[in-house]
Amino acid sequence: MVGLSRLILASRLTAALLSSRTSLKRFDRILVKRNMSVVTSKLTTEERFLFDLNGYLVVRGALSNDEVMELNGAIDEHAGEALARSAKALRNAGEGSAFSEKGARRDLGGMLAWETDVFRRLLAHPKLAPYLCELCGEGYRLDHQPLVLLQDGDSEGFALHGGPLSGDDGVPNGGYFNPELQYRCINGQPWNSLLAMAVHLVDAPDGAGGFCVVRGSHKLNFAVPKHYATGTDIAFADEFAVQPATKAGDVLFFSEATVHGAKPWKMPYERRLALYRFAPPNFAYGRAYLNEWAVGEDTDLTKVIDLCTPAQRAVLLPPFAPRLERAVTNAHGDNGEPQIKLRSTAKKSHDKAVFKSDYF
Image 1: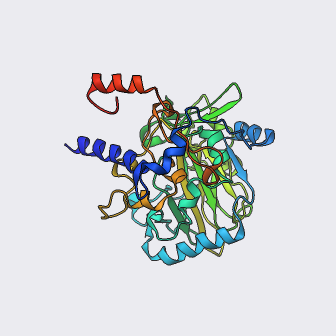
Image 2 (image 1 turned 180 degrees about the vertical axis):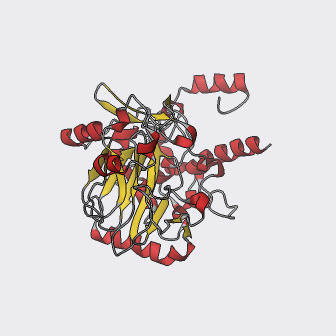
Image 3 (image 1 turned 120 degrees about the horizontal axis):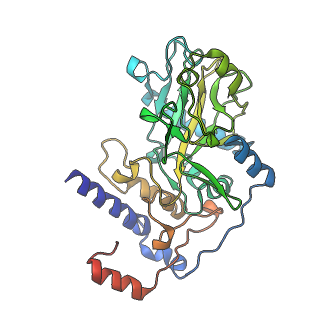
């Protein structure tokens, strides 16, 4: 019954995205467009090259100073809700490794349901949507609940993880093909099964610690040796686990197929980073869509959806293919309207008669 309930909830989200608050009429001008327009990518030749080469890309100054202040102000109001990963079972790095330190990271969630829309705006931000469309495809969807990472000085990082070859719990030392975390580039079109978007809210100069990456590992053909992944080989971490220098307002996109982690935070001020994970429209790793992005004990299953713009709602849809009348957010983000490519009425009527259901 639990599985059935989750399926029912997922179908309700689809309906809510098209009807919450304003009714289906809000989408009328979208539905009449039978063919989705193709939005020209705004990524430069250099940006495509660097992402394909390294498995990540830093977009400098993607957010304005005012936006960074808004995001930090919202975090200030909710900072007391953050939970520390102090327990041994929650620590992200082995003691004595290149990634370990005495302090613990603090995790803060629930931002999509906050009264302020500053975190919801990142779902279809006009400056970020072109990158999400280029790297996940039009109709990209949010895959995990967003997470804010908070760290004081001398707090631990995170052992290396991710990558296209994985073992138990995603640790990249098993050497098995991992279909959940893949990168491809076919005919000049990049594709990621899971893409992370790290929004930097404080400066992280060279040597500060924080996010680190093994460049080019999204294409690796041999498993990362365990002592490299865990950081017990400190020389490897020093040389190959690169920490890109970033400033507040920079946004770093990285493929989850790229082996990555975090180095201990060394700055005298708090580290702040908002982490979003996105997937192509018909892919899913996480399960947040099964409870319709509801937060905590809130049983109002459309609360978050009701707070969103049409483009943001489309990003929160469950995974299914665009050809099945998916509302698709494109590179215009919130500066445009999501579009739906309609199937023929005859085919839909036939399917409903065969399957006795609106969806097959």
